[in-house]
Length: 47
Image (cartoon, rainbow, N blue to C red; front, side):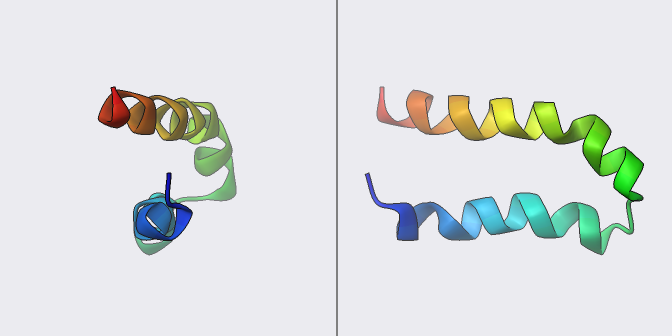
């Protein structure tokens, strides 16, 4: 389980909303969705 290998993927999840110019309210609204994706995707990738 390499964190450095996944870092660009996590960084893109953070940078995309910023690049799209989302407001903090929009980001906070979708934060739970991002957290679920971050948790579930690596688990499915390893399974």
